[in-house]
Length: 517
Image (cartoon, rainbow, N blue to C red):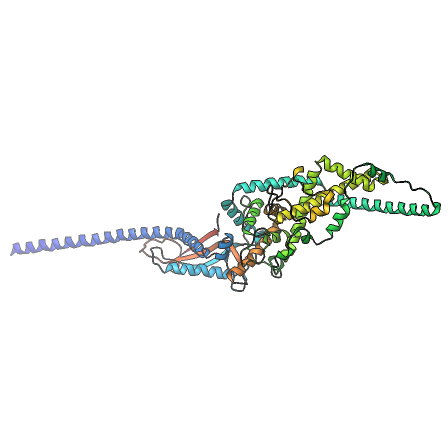
């Protein structure tokens, strides 16, 4: 009996010891598990901030992946249309797109489970901001990627040559006016002398006429061509395109409605400043325009508003005809200046001009008047040569920027026939019409050039897309966004982690997105 009681006591003690070990182990396991879950939650909370920034960046990239496809396909430009259907930019529409993109991502469960609670666009930049700085940046990027640098080097060399031409020629227009005035004064003086001589003859009866010194000079020398000043003066009063074009019936009749152009409406503007100091170069911009836009000798595709787009960028007129006429006028001046530099180095032509001037105004006995008349003859000769040059360019031929004597085509002895002649010898050496346009584009004020280019793009994209309300000032290129994300606790936590409001974690993210190079 005593033995049984002892045995029962031992069994009871044994049961008590087993029970105490199980409870202790359970407590230890709970503490370990709590610690591990707390560490997991802490690691998750630390990752939530990084994930918030990453998610915002991904959501912005996804939204900006919906760029305007017509701009990309036709011009290689990346811009997001944020218009509300009426052609007006709406930032709330962009914010809602970001929220929608975040909602679609949240439908996929993951360990972070962040939800976008609020989004605000802090700053943004449009295609037309700062005189189209973002358009220029992208245009230069495309030109650098797709076009050879040799084209830039050649254009820069041509521009430098033209600048030297401008410095050497001075004010040709003023010199031409002085020559016309000198010629007019000489003509008036000659008419006065003739009137006086006629009166003296009537008074003296059979008095023998004494020939003038200039007439005796002309009789003793070789036959000279007529003074070209009078012919060129009359020619300048003729319609310009009729002089330089062989077939005016083939001129484009297209025009562009400028009522709602970028220059004539209030533009929607952003508040972000773009740093494009190293990425924008006017030479590359000119190359881009020359590559993407049409001109007189480079036909446009079907559906373009204008056929002479480069000419519009230079002149800014409403119609193709007006733009071409203005460009021809500038080309004539450019060629006249370059020809003047060439003719001033040709002693034979200068000597011939001096003889013509002496025959025209030499009777006055004024050396300065003869010198002025000589300059007028040379300028008139250069203008006639320039007409032939521009005519060649419009036919698709080439003309050297600075000629030598062997490349001169205008003959003073047959001035009218030279200018009106149609069967001129083809010129295959020199610069083409498009290359001359590049010089004129570079000479155009940069802001004007940029906005005119955007006008062309806007009008064409409206036709391509069928959306006649599309506006380039509703095209966004980059934004800075502030956002608030929230996340609920996922693992059990026994220590306070993160910032909690009503049991949720809140994280602030800020990211900038730009259509990069």
